[in-house]
Length: 219
Image (cartoon, rainbow, N blue to C red; front, side, top):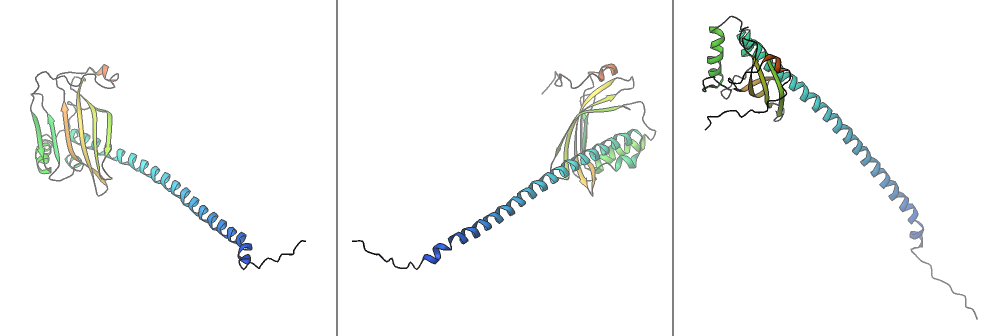
């Protein structure tokens, strides 16, 4: 009544029983690949954090070096130290210096020879150290903007003392360029307010001036 059935040999049976071994190989390969990718990921994160830290440290060092150059230019001028003053500038034909005068005009020099012939000559013609006019200079709200590793733009509020001890406000602009590892001044622009005097006893309370557009006879 019941018939004994004989199933033909499946020639692929050997292949079927080897599938678990293939799966193990795929698993191991995948695990190894994921481990390698994980190592690269963490190595990249570590390297990125290190580079960021180095960049921040470098930027602060550059800021300190820039401000040291700017301070040296000021102190050298008042001390009538021509060589010290000269060493702070980029001796290039695109160097620029300009400032406003109390009579409403401005002085400007383009190119290092022009700057040297103007301020440099003044130092030579007036060799005695200057102590009476603007001996105190305070810089506040300094803003830096780097353009690559070798150029920087700055602005700040500057308070310059008079002979009577009171202060005048100026808006300052500098462009700095790194040459042979040293930061040099490329551009100086100074806009002075000669009308509104700041008493010395009020200077410490000033964070920023409320009204910096005070002119009445404008274009």
